[in-house]
Structure formats: C-alpha cells, structure tokens
Length: 118
Image (tube, rainbow, N blue to C red; front, top):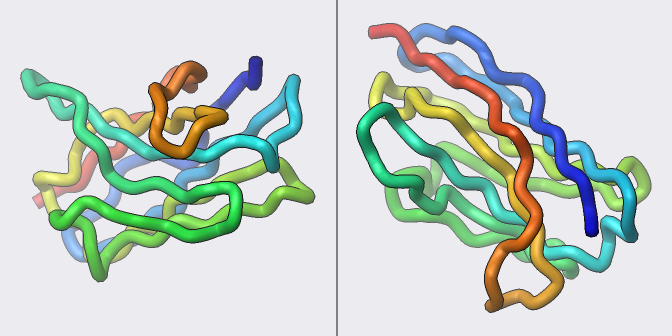
C-alpha cells in the first residue's frame, strides 16, 4: 500500500498559478496510476485528472488547457500544475493511487486546500 502526502496548496488570486505535489512512499511508485480529485465546500468530490504509469494524462473538461499533471518516478512524486485559476477552483485537492488503470483508487492523501480569491 502506498502512502500519499499532498503539498503546495494556498491562497492565490484569480488568474494565478499553483503547483500541487503528491509525494509517495511505502511502495513502488512507478507501479501506480495517479489521480487528482477535488472537493469544494458542499459539493461532491470530483475527478480533476490522472496520469497513468506510462505518463499519459487525461483531464476533466473543466480544467483542460489550464491544468497539467506530471510525474517523476525517480522522486516518487506526481504534480498538478494549475494555471489561470478561478474562484470556482477553490477546493480541497487530493491525490490518489491505484494499481489498475481503470479500477478503484485505494490509496488517498489527506488533501491540501486551494483557495482562489476573486
């Protein structure tokens, strides 16, 4: 089981940028597919994007062109690069890991808060 810890959240003005990082430990990071999710206050958790073992990424429509995901297997990290941030991007962001590309995510981080001021 891999342990995940997110970092990099904070307060940013509209139009600003942040980079969130997901650090993994306890297992072979390169074996895992990584997903990023978010939960805004009073809303359900939603999928933001993911990156598979091979480094191919996919994104939810609402972040396409603004967010990108990268991974560095040597450093056991997966980053979420967020640009052109909007107030509606305010949420707690979580990274998650799974061994099967299309199965359930079974390891989750504790989350990091992102607040975009208007």
